[in-house]
Image 1 (cartoon, one colour):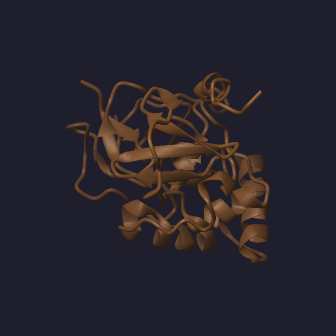
Image 2: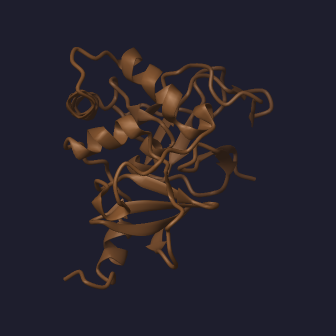
Image 3: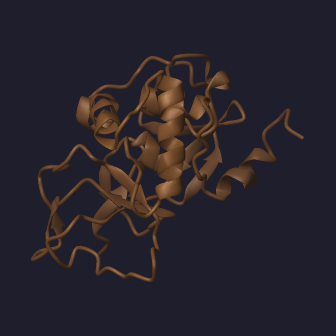
Length: 213
């Protein structure tokens, strides 16, 4: 039985066997004795996304009362859920994200807690709301995600791809009622130049999207 440690783009934490390309945490939200998640879904406003391997260190997942390891399909998924790059294990990525976040949001001298406070007000899991699209879907920056009904969609090259636990698939039907899922401040960082790591399945579907060579 898989642990309840995989994060969907909505921020929901579910029990599925796939693990994904990134790990991360929201503080301590599990019971190591039973290896089950607690009722609360965060114990800090600092929701981070980390690399799976760092300096050869290995952790036994949920074996002790330390931060609760969570897993994401890719970085776009973690950003949609309201996480940001970790300044410890992903320092260069985190610095690039902060620089783009400052540029896109017209801020300066921003610290990690400043971004965390904004993200906590914006992400679906804590704010309980989606956001209006700031522009047409075709104009959203690569890596942004939208929500239409129960489905999440990644936007790449102006085209939507359906999120699934194992990767992305071609989208079917209209997204006319879609709302913005990725926190607006993060979308502005993407528009200012931050490029999240996307799951390899993206490329296999982009080649079959009509109108692309």
